[in-house]
Image (cartoon, rainbow, N blue to C red; front, side, top):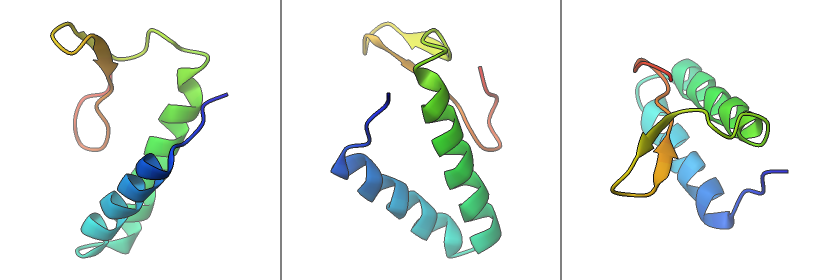
Length: 67
């Protein structure tokens, strides 16, 4: 199970608030997409691309290419 930290939830709200300045519709969709991807991390542990210098993976969302 993926557990959301308080910091992560605050950041998710900030993402929503920033995008919502232009479009609440797109803000809601992006947040839903982020949550959906995070929920899949437990099952798909190799999802995303490896960022070797940071020793972690990243997943692009929104209008960027998803890997």
